Image 1 (tube, helix red, strand yellow):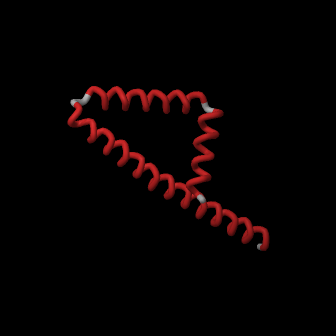
Image 2: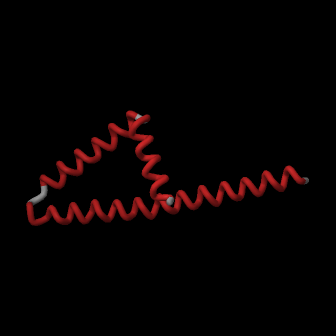
Image 3: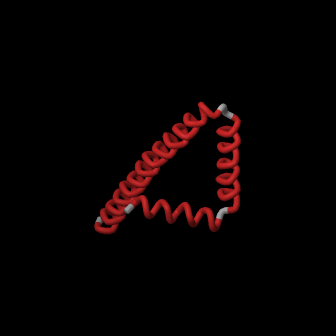
Length: 85
């Protein structure tokens, strides 16, 4: 579920934030330039690096999402406690 939510956020960023879109395109362009500059027998390492970065990003996104959820629950409990006091 959180993965779908994050994909929606990325799509929204692409649609509404021109700086984000530009930086994403530049990042892809630079990665491809670097990969293509490598000798053919080392280009696989660039793909492995990219896959590792995607995995790290997925773990980070999950942790951020869960922390946001915990923070929301904490705030909700605090508001509930303060309104009953």
